[in-house]
Image (cartoon, rainbow, N blue to C red; front, top):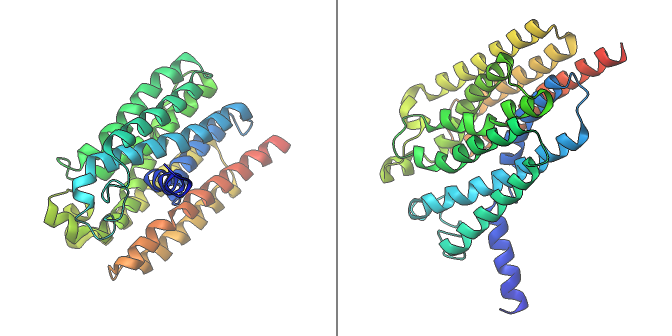
Length: 293
């Protein structure tokens, strides 16, 4: 293998792991940072924070590889995914399998620095990440399963900080499930026609002409849960300002998706990182205010 072939192979691995599209890492990371902040009362151990940031990036990359292994025959038939490395055979299945295993082992190595409860939970997280691609064959709304998989850093964060999982963690996870259904339905609206042709299930297909209404209701459910959590914990104005900013971003997304133009739906999906960021900033500022007070 010459230098150019090596560079091409590395680029193919990068695309396979979606490192060129960090939105997925951010959508996993924001709920985890919410949980770490709440569990630690705004004073997290920074080593634990770094473990979760690196672990999130590694597991998202591994999940993308496993998703493409499972969908390699379908991706070649879909306009948006036909150029993915496995679909174009730039990367072999064997290479992709080794890559997914290596990424998972690296993530597990990081978890070994945490307590036993978190280590046990990591096996469930791995199971969720690796089985999600299969749910698109039989679940009407696989996005709900994705929400659990993407949000499983929440109970793990509480376990890592406090060595137990309070009911609050599961409430926060439920909020994330509604969020994932909303943003991944926007994503699925882009591929709806292709998914119908090849027999892949998605929430965009399940909701049909009520897709925009369903997305709106999911966002509202997410906000109501987060408002309840804020009231229960006793958060102040900064937290609710963050939720207010998130609500404004949701209204903006509604303006993008209401005509179901594919490019606008994809744009709406990509803007979800700002929703997670707004919530985190409000939460962090409120906790900082408490700490300084």
